[in-house]
Amino acid sequence: QLPLATASTWRIAGDINYQSKVYADALNNALTRLPEQTYVNLLLGWTSADKHWNATLSARNLLDKRYRQ
Image (tube, rainbow, N blue to C red; front, top):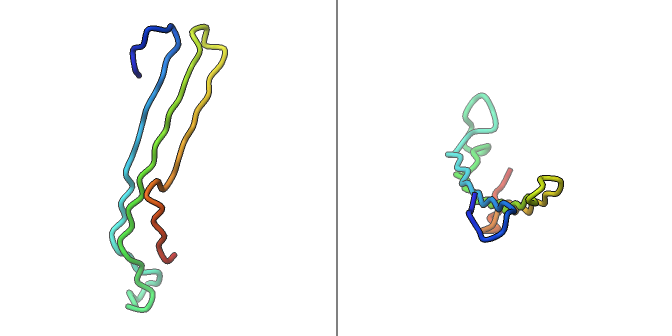
């Protein structure tokens, strides 16, 4: 939360999701191996002073990475 001059509350959050290489079958076949994957996400939220209103904006995959699934 960010302390601002208004009585409302702002929140900023972010996360990084990493997955190492994995295999899509039980035999660990090289043809089914999926590469390492990293995703960056962000969230911005606002709550009014009386706590009756709130708004949230979130973005996923900010780096626009595309991986074979």
